[in-house]
Amino acid sequence: MTDTSAFPDPVYRETVLEPLFEGVRTHYAGHMDAINRAHLVMLTETGILPRADAARIAGALSDIAADTDPASLTYTGEHEDWFFLVEAELRRRLGDLGGALHTARSRNDMDHTMFKMVLRDRAATLLDEGLALAATLRRRAGEEAGTPIVAYTHGQPAQPSTFGHYLAAVLEVLLGDLDRLARAMQALDACPMGAAAIITTGFPIDRDRVAHLLGFERPRLNSYACIAGVDYVTGLYSAIKLVFLHLGRVVQDMAFWSAFEVGQLYVPNALVQVSSIMPQKRNPVPIEHMRHLAAVTCGHCDTIVDTMRNTPFTDMNDSEGEVQQAGYAAFASGGRMLRLAEAFLGQVRIDGARVRATADAACITVTELADTLVRDEGLTFRAAHEIAAATARAAIAARAPLSASRDAFAAAFRDQTGRDTALGPDAYAAAVSMEGFVARRDRPGGPAPAALAAALDTYAATHAALADTLAAGRARRREAEADRAAAFAALLET
Image (cartoon, rainbow, N blue to C red; front, side):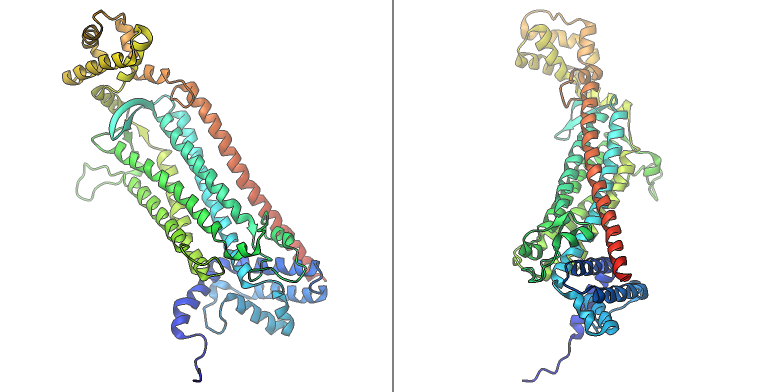
């Protein structure tokens, strides 16, 4: 049978080749040019390519870049992809010499290098946005260190804390997630160039030089892993997912705290929308947008990680082109969520009157009354707990705050111990106050001012270290860009 078909099949062109071309045009054209220039410099410095030939190729690459507007190009099907378009243009201008640039490399190592170059820039931006949110959390935690709140467990009022202590908890988790993201980004700094198709090349290439010229910290060692390993993808998106999974839980608290029935959190007018029909409504809809942006970002991350499930450990399109481009949606939605969360958490405030009302109605300071009885009256905690529980039940039944329930406490104490309490009115009032409760919790990690201040100092150091790591990577890439430009310019001057 004679096959008279011509490549590409129209449907294959429409469903695969054209979208891939558009993806490279949109995301990778500049990175491919950088790889071409770095590879050409290395071929010249190692003597693989004569300098005179390299100079002609450099001139053609420079002219192609100047003559080509990627945004204006459309896929014609004349060339399989962007790589072959550029190579065809080189050969049109230089003849057979135009094919010399591809010595000792493959589209395989080029593709994964481009993917990493895009991912490291997007991940750096996301980390920057996360650090901005962390800075806002740290600032607000310091400002709100003395602002009482009701801490909830199992959806019920539990104990007093401060808004600063709560925000510090969010900050601690966020910094841990950002550190995990930064560590996942380290895999993006291992350059695949030099792996060629999958097992390197017989030419005496300098992989370290290419890695440096492209702003990578080092080459990835094993060439097979350079092409077959998708751990830089799965590790990165797994780390990104956890940032938003954990922030989504904070958003749920914001929804609960701002509900009319709870009212602990006040959302300013700038972040509130009104109903189109109900004039009394204050709808803090940014909370819902944060919630869905966080959830969507997690979903994008899951899509990319799950796409790698049960794929072969070799070169494959499942980890390339369209999959990589699909993952960029996580950076878009995630960045929006982080910026919105920074604005929201930077402006909301606590409604002190509602906090006091809930604290009184739910007797949330009664744990400290039990603790005080252990310290000052010499009771076991279980006996003290029974007295405190009886006091709370009496206060709630009478709809009275604990501060006004000393007589009920004295009766419960007498029933439990057979004697009168030595806790006078002032000592009792101190034991059931929110301020006293917080001040007593001065162990490391607690809400008392000194403990919280020490924790914030620790978080500041962690934040600074992450910011330094981010800045160092950007500085390395700027230096590499300058070195690459200088080395390439030297070829042009040959």
